[in-house]
Amino acid sequence: MAKPVGAITRGTTGYNRLRRCDRWIAAVHGPLLRSAGRPLVVDLGYGASHTTTLELFTRLRRVVPGVEVVGIEIDPARVAVAKPYEREGLSFRLGGFELPVPRPPTLVRAFNVLRQYGEEEAWRYWDALTGRLAPGGVLVEGTSSENGRRAVWAGLTAGGPRTITFSARFEAFERPSDLADRLPKTLIHRNVPGERIHAFLSDFDRAWAVSAPYGAHGRRQRWLAAIQALSASWPVPMRPPLGGVARWRLGELTLPWSAVDPRA
Image (cartoon, rainbow, N blue to C red):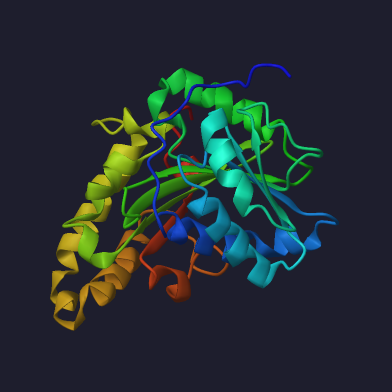
């Protein structure tokens, strides 16, 4: 067997750390998975515990009963620990960015994997992963805090990045720009004046500030008001599956990647 491509991560993980992203995947990409003949989902770099892969499997099975989930880890010891938890539709195997699976996956989730790489490497691995997707497939790549209360992820297809999603528990931030430390590696060093991502987060902070009176009704109402204010100057999707009150109420906001693309 060829040596897996990539480097071992710290492996930090925990229960429900990726629940926000799982919920988004089920809602936004559930139709894609249901339309696939044999939907295969890869959880790349699941870490020292099988927990988040099992949670992804459980959540997706509720909306896509026939989905198959494969957890891939570059550390043989982590794979050995996860193996006893295999079951019909859920397996674990050794590998890396080469994605050693029997057929192209419909969806790949890669969380907290690329932070240890440089920006240019991250772009290359994005290209490598999207190049291995099934036709119409999606890569969801991002970063979360260790307790899962703050997360940012990008949605990509074979044509490149398509969306960026910000998600947080309302008590987990003082202002929206606090999520900057969870930006994808392709953006995190671009959060400086003159860059689109910096302009967006600055405007989001201003929208949050002017929406302060809504805080009397709770931080959720303030978040909803801030998004409405932000939509006057940014291309916020207003309807499902990416936008609308039902998603915003969860502490989510998705934008087209083009709005923050540092290469545009």
